[in-house]
Image 1 (cartoon, helix red, strand yellow):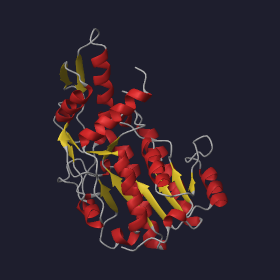
Image 2 (spheres, rainbow, N blue to C red; image 1 turned 180 degrees about the horizontal axis):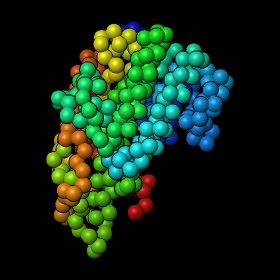
Image 3 (tube, rainbow, N blue to C red; image 1 turned 30 degrees about the horizontal axis):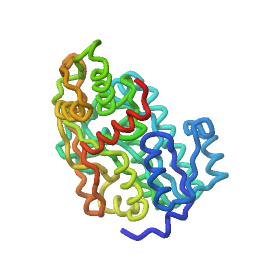
Length: 324
């Protein structure tokens, strides 16, 4: 591991700066003295379009790139829009990673997802478990696209020696999350469901959740993820991963809980006192996805925000920014 050469003064292209993850990274970098961030909205730069990406890199020549741009969603969206998820994510990462190599980017961090790991992999999920078994079917296209991004970074490093590598966050939540019930992940969906039920008791005092409530999930507050990305930028190089036999580094809390326990925690934060039921006809998804975060702990980073505190902060943001 080597110390970075004043990376805060580099020109950094942050792809996906308007999403929950990208906006958190942007806030963190700006608050810590990074004064040369380059961002583009989707209307200004369509990352799926190779020509537009090539033109952007030709003109801007960013010294560092963070890929937080992706098409994302929960179980329902991943399972219904399978072609959209694999195509868009493959194109985004391939266009950016290839252009970054061609135009001399010095460092690149690609953000993946814990769904890259096999459905029935041993727990907790070690980095070495990548490609060791079959994936969960409901989010297989998204996972395959993310695995391709990981292997793109590793392959460019092994062929050309470039400082490109991947970080795998666990399930994220926080300000600017997606609270749409059809396309959101489980935690923001539960916040919305319990909030609506609490404030419309005359309509329905029961919240129905998908599946059995038994699957276990790990959650990381997005501001902690942003802190982790800055830590990686400043302290960790591609060789620290690849020369130790891994293709990516996990970012999480190392702690999980069942969906049933999560529902109880969120309902308590929101103050919902009604009934919680489960629709067993709906899929559970992967039984458990707990990240092994021992490597990033050894490298010097650990999360700060407890799950309850993160939910409280997220619900406060939700109340201020959502009209329901």
